[in-house]
Image (cartoon, rainbow, N blue to C red; front, side, top):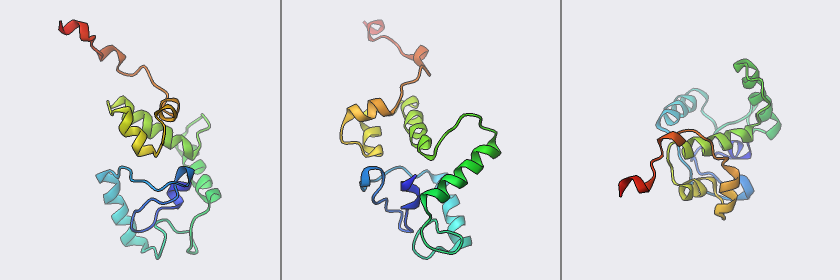
Length: 134
């Protein structure tokens, strides 16, 4: 959650989770929407500025997130941090190497990433044993 409110117009992510700076993915679809947003709202310093200017607070982000959860009819109790877990899980399910996910999440230890990205059973039936290639 703190990562979103720490985005600046330059899209340099500083002081994210664990107060770390890092590089992460920016999808082309999101980039297009961010350009439209930027043209419409013309933020001065922070990419996402509050209604009266200035940096959003974590409470503001939490409030917006919870409103979206309600509107979407989601019954579980996700948090903005859940999006980070989902990002990692989707990358893992798409076949992204755990070491790359570790870098994108800014983890120093692969153990942290393994715990963080709960491995799903998605696509387990598509895994082929290396013994089948003998």
